[in-house]
Amino acid sequence: MTRVQREPQLERAQFVVEAARSLQAEQPVALNVRALVSYADTLVLATGRSDRHARSITDAVLAALSRQGEKPLGIEGYDEGRWILVDFGDLILHVFLSEVRDHYDLERLWSDAPRMEIGEDRASALP
Image 1 (cartoon, rainbow, N blue to C red):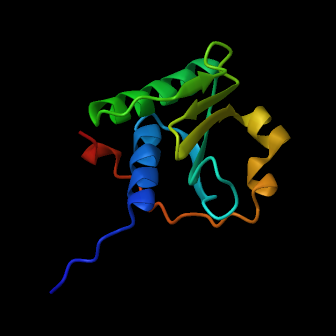
Image 2 (image 1 turned 45 degrees about the horizontal axis):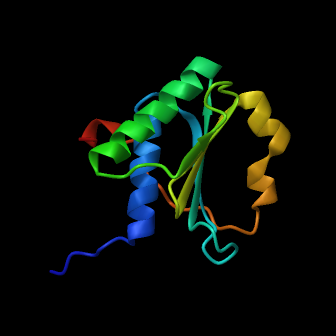
């Protein structure tokens, strides 16, 4: 029986979501924007309960990708912790406080982008 391989974009989104979930990120969503923009393939959105929690979620994702040899191209908003954007080139992570996520409503803004099926929480499987 042949093993079905998942698309690398989906694998990466799943890995980032799992890293965020390992710190109890709320409402993680991965959007496939590959056909809509030239600067990224995937947007991952997550919510933290406080600025400290948002920074911790971001740190968990940074650490998980760093163990795989990946470094971000840029990080914005980390000090304030209200909306943290981490640019990994083809994947962009947004970690919001709830009221900021509701205000900017990126899911509505990117409503043409298909949601990626990221599956259930498997954070315990992270290296």
